[in-house]
Length: 252
Image (cartoon, one colour):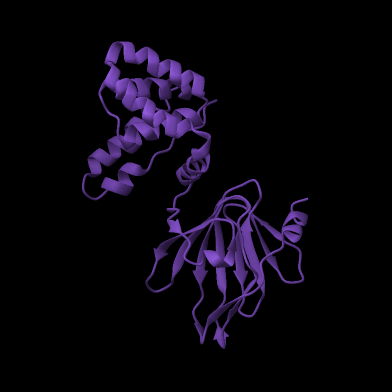
């Protein structure tokens, strides 16, 4: 049975400006047509790429569908044969244009970017930009503000193996932090205690003055909402990095 296709781009980008278009894009095109069972997803991906190529569409929308094709099992050899075959009917310039995009998608050097975009498709919240606090992390992390008023909330996304340093949220009173896992798999650990595995829906409450760290599993992207709890004279103290040996031990 095919995995259900879910799309929210219409509402996210045009929900207020063009609600009917957003509905047709998210609920009809992707919600119904892409989930119709007579054709498998891989075949639909190939048909979509061919249709866009024939129409002369060679912008980011085609690149999205090329990545979608790759993620649904279309190999580099298959896409090369598909584009070559279509070029015979749609024209040489279109073939060159599509091959330029396909090389980016199937190039091994772009694998990390593709993985990031795949994970973004699983998340409700944006991944955001490279984390400005990256100096306190081992590996690459990203930060996206969800709320900057009343209660500060940020979505923190970490690539596989990424984790932050041991740290402490200080406060004279109140303070601390709450984590809500929204994607992937990761770990949370307090100083002197066993690590806790985190999966979507798990909530971690971190009191002030507790030394701890949190990060992604070695084989999974990980995203959590970080909610700052209001406190008096609050601050964050960054400590030493989590060693490779300690990180490895919690996953064995």
